[in-house]
Length: 306
Image (tube, rainbow, N blue to C red; front, side):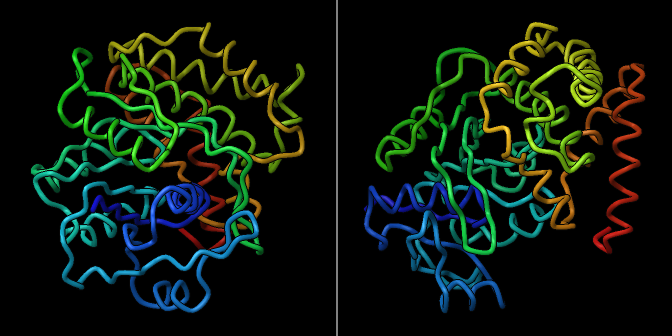
């Protein structure tokens, strides 16, 4: 029996869990949780698109067989704790699929669990939103993944391809996974951060104006740092990003804007923080992202979530 363990049932994790539940019996799915969160999931389940799912909940200390697939969908500031909670689920045949934003989670997971396969992966095109009524989405998008060094797919990448096919999760093997991760970072640094700063929906970025100008300024710093690192991003990628944003619902919000509106801690460390740190490493000035980083650090203090 092919099994999947999922840690993190926010919008992204819950949407994928619900999609898997349409393709496989609940006995093949395990949600890793502890304490009050585990109790709440057992008592209330999780509602996705109006349907309640009562996923089997496993405490980290419970003995289980290693999973074939682990999906990690926590926020990055919860990753260190999540890594410790995965131990009983990881074996030599396990494939770990990280859907975290940023460009560092796979490296951290690989360091903790060298016996497992951890391809580079990103979730693209998903429109899941979490609110008081649960999680809702119209598309789960797809998972793009591949090896850290482009070439013939490794055994881990081929295995992830098979597992996502089994669980009917849309996916694509990327021929240049590092570039795919940086492309997603480009989106997050621009649209996510600036929309969160302004607490604004996509519509504000769908025409020329100061919001779009600020977004592009932040993204140009990503391009500069990426190229210094040997990743081939360009101004064309920014133009492509603007086109994609133009296709999204004008009243919808990015995930980071949703966090800001709810006064939740954001992932600015993984976005502006990464750009600023790498800018310092390569001698590249990143003033826009430095201000964004300071602004959200101040917001976190104001919200009491620093």
